[in-house]
Image 1 (tube, helix red, strand yellow):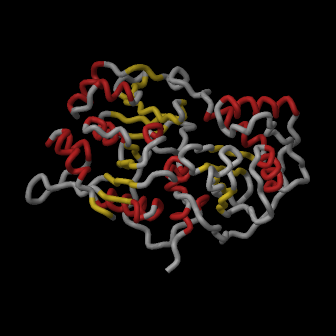
Image 2 (cartoon, helix red, strand yellow; image 1 turned 135 degrees about the horizontal axis):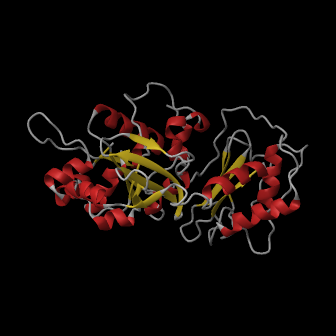
Image 3 (cartoon, helix red, strand yellow; image 1 turned 180 degrees about the vertical axis):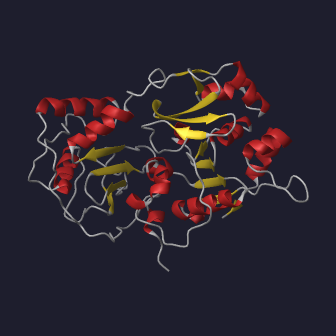
Length: 369
């Protein structure tokens, strides 16, 4: 039985995977950028560790209109010290020598690198715990400008989104759910300044604001324009070997009340049932892009506890997550019954009805998927 390619993408590989997609090298359609603009991109990349390079190496290559994207990427990565040969093709996953740690004493091929099928960008991470060097490179400087200039590097602020600290009404709302002000503050939960009945869950990556999800007390949800598709609470699992994934932001806060900070929430939505189809290619797996966008965090996790809702969509979500993350490292929480007929719905339901200690015991008793 063949193993879906997705399951390999979340752990260090010891062999190459063949691509199922045809290689199509296309010339970049973007106009030649000025060298001064290139320096701007480079400065932003350095300042935010997008692709920190070995000492005294200049990782900027001005795009050549006649050069295929993959070749532009290879030039940029070679300037970063990453040596690629003709076997490093778009759509494949490669294990290479890390220019930072040189593979340690064993000289391992510890740098896991992936070039997306269309050759637009590459991403990498060294899986040696003493190194962990990671970054991205883009074939098209316009794409780098879009990602650096518009989203990932702080142009989105609490002020630009019209957010303010939680007021008494929403603090009381969370108190009824046994979520403390300390937990709310640590997770930067806020409210809209022009509608004080709307909760704002701020999404952050490396401490920077990259989006916001809103919720009314009547359980109406929406996401702000430009919000990155990532897991909520992502920075809390940056160094975690074991994590918990829940179905909602309030459940993430609830588990913190039970002593778990190594918890993230999916940004929203659960499927009605488990798909009977094979897993799609990453670029077409639109409903789960938040996993692939957080791949560098999930790659190094040894154990994943799935604590999704007890209803059918929540159980389907757990199975879909396990398909992508690898069932062999996934455990699932089984919510107990509240009476002879009903089950607890989720983490916050347990916290409210049975308390933090009961919630902790239930998580500790998670079963292998």
